[in-house]
Image (spheres, rainbow over the protein chains, first blue to last red):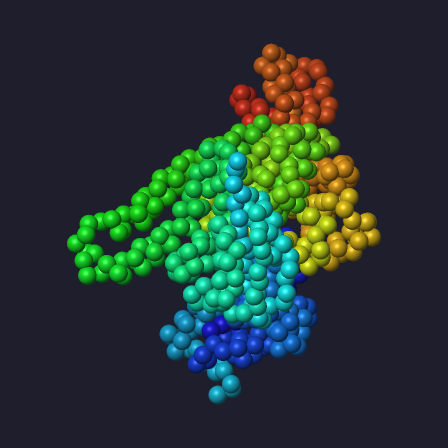
Amino acid sequence: MVSASVAARISPEGIERTRWIRLVPLVAESVEMEVVIKLIEDSVRGLSGVVLAEKGDLYNLARWRVESILGREFKYPESRGERRAMELAHHASFAGRKLVLRLMEEGLGSGVLKRAGGA
Amino acid sequence: MKRDKTAVLLFREDPRDEHHPEKMAELLGLAEAAGYRVLAEISQRRGRDRRFQLGRGKIVEAASLSPEKLIFNEPLSPGQIFNIGKEFEVAAMDRFNLILEIFASRASSREAKLQVELARLSYEAPFVRTIESLNKLSERPGYRGSGSYDVSMYRDIRGRMTKIRAELKAVEETGERRRERRRKLGFDLVALAGYTNAGKSTLFNRLALETVAAKDQPFTTLSPTTRAVAAKERRFLLTDTVGFIDDLPLFLIKAFRSTLAEIVEADLVLLVVDLSDPPEILRERLASCHEALWDCGCYSPIVSVLNKMDRICSDEAEERAEMIRDLTPNPVFISAREGRGLEGLLDLIAEKLPPMEEFLVHLPSSEEGMGQLSRLYDVALPMEVKYGEEIEVLLRGRREIVARALKGREYPDLSPSQPPAGG
């Protein structure tokens, strides 16, 4: 799987400025909560601001629970701008996944991929 | 004498969620808007029961009051409706069905009736299919040989849905042509959107000096109404639309696509917010509106109209506006009921509408030229007219509209009076 984090300044209506996009590829046996949280932590490391993620990605956990697990400010998308940023991250992660798969087909993927749990 | 419709409201709270008394209040408002007399409100904090949604004891308690309907806040599966009807001999419905019932009772235009019918059929089709299959279980030994009765109802529903969709597509195309015609006439399109009962129709009546039905109840407006309004030098068409509600099901959005197209195609959306709602509800409702706008593909700029200032003091209003700042672009405080803050709103609308360009147009001093000048007066804003060998007109308007007004000329002399800088 590939996680994409988009660092952006958002207005209620849309994205005002995209600072950068980071892609984190990961191989895992199962998509458990710890794996997802680890992936999010890796993706947003070094970034300030509020972390946004889809409800489904975090198994519909209440916001306060995610905040206490992540240890930083977190919210689910509400405004049109936040949804637009999520859409951008989805496109980026999908494109990243396709790229990783192509690299793997060509036998070049092993260097980019990290296994969950550091194995 | 007309007999009252009676209902008991049932509400299940997830043990992991916070307590939300306002959701029960909203369900009560919807039930009353649908004409039900509510006998009791029963809530239970527990996980979802597979058979009845709530625990058996609570359903028995509700059924003992002999209501006509049990209204559940949570969506019921076809199986749950079947089980409740069979075990407790009382009809059950969920919030979506209640909304559909309100829509059905208020739909007056042909379009609204078709939309409501499509929404109802989209909702009922899977129910019919499940109930048919459940009924079939007892007939299994011979059902294959007993004719087509057991599948015909589902098939009929699908057929009717296809027919309604085709009719609504025609309505949608007519609406699109109408909006295109209005744009050609030089009007900008502005749509009112917002949570149900936020005061959209009251604001519409204030701005358009109209008298459309505006009541303190959810879903008073179902069909869009459009009227011309002037703001500063801009003329625009203002459309009142159906309100949004929390957890609006996708099939309802799809069914009301032709109505919501008025919002999607607008040059500017006025997002009306009831500022007198308690802060946490206010935020939740605004998020629902943003979700609905996103779902129907609306990317137009938004002006947030913070309404019902007459119900709260200005300090409190400022405080609430600050709390929802990330959900309210271009906020403006108004009271549609008292007519307060409307000038500021009109100024902001004029500012946020697509900008008009300035043109210097030369027309022949002839009958044809005078005709074109007359058309320009209808669709644009001539600021200065000089009559000489030629008629020189300095005007402001939208490029495509001015070009269209001068279509009769072989080589329309259309050049911006202030060409953009740079190459």
